[in-house]
Length: 573
Image (cartoon, rainbow, N blue to C red; front, top):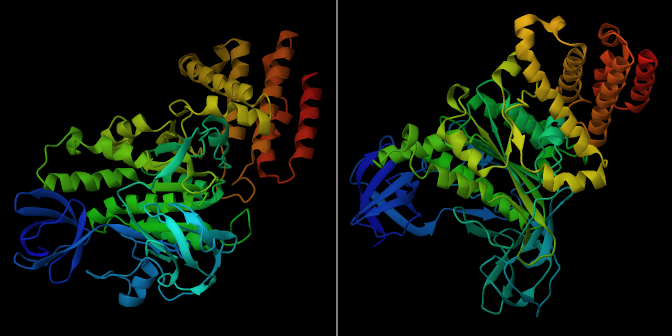
């Protein structure tokens, strides 16, 4: 039976009778054919979460089962797109109905009319299996979209030809009569299979000094950015999206405020990709699901984004996925759970909150995909918005269990205008040990030694600050006064970075290393001078160290750095 009627409505949760679907099937609800997903089956009643606003529909209206789970269309044309949570392209919806999305509207995820220039790389008679590359299409300048056999198909190619095709045209056939097209579909709740998972032993280079030096993230790793309102989560994620060395960026605005999402949607199409000089949108997919959109679609948006990321990973690309913010996603789960009258867990969140978060983050990883020897990776960076900045609340705590990199934002640092406002005492990364050989080989053999030295000085500063607040800095022994000065240099030169300065917005590893080295050099010189009887006051009055922060804003920084190093040595002699 594929048609039933609405029995009961509670917000986005609708109970229907008279249909016999499977779990996670998509149903069309009411006269307006709203899209919804089966989330519970109780004898003859079926409970559906609807992805759209349900006001105005009433019991007795028809419900039709499509017999299929929520799937996304995967093929050329995804990049540069701006979708809502269920992969409807927003620019297409604007043309159909203006600024406000009407209900029950459908639009395919890919442009059905555009013709793509397909170049076959396989030929008739080739044996292929899931993930095998059969050809390619230049999707945007510089990004080759590899056309693959869907993961659940295999056989011998009986025909395949190059040419200009739309995503719906048949480009070839397998001997089991399966028709090959430029596009494929995949259910969003199931991760795409891979051949092998690899160790995360390469860093995701972000160009942000505090991340690259003190708290690095590995390619295929997972990071969480929790922080209270106004601490700079969104700017931090936008910086990562702009500058990290991933090939493809998937940005999910999940339940964010409309004005924040507007900023992203207006700014991203204007940005230039620093690597190629072309628009950054050429390798970006945006998924916009603002806080006033229906809550159920908010849950779907996260899965839609990660499925698109997996598709590009299977082509051998490294993908960075930004989810801003997983707290809103958890709130949507809480709202639906309470409508289902499930037993609430901590703070009203459903008992399965930690499982859902883990399932999402587990879809990251550095892998060898099916059908190729190239490696691909998905690095997931999830923002968390704990109410009142309280990191002990359930979403932050459950995220902490599954992430190895924790970048904690601090409202006090943001108020002091220290950006990025990452608190170096509460943040941590568990990747440095696995990344140490990479940094030693590609940057400098003493990279990790310098990082540990910087952290030790910052931790010592924290201990000394308690004494300073009681008796003032002058009461401290001279050696400790010097430590405070070095810590101040680390904070102001290394950790502070301007997202809005055209030079300082991105800092490569070589420059980061040079900064750490110069601070360490000053520390050694100053301590040696102290040993020889120089008064700490004379050391603190040296001019060269105060000019170290000028390096940040210079493109050609090496001459200035050499000059300051010589001046520093001269003054401390």
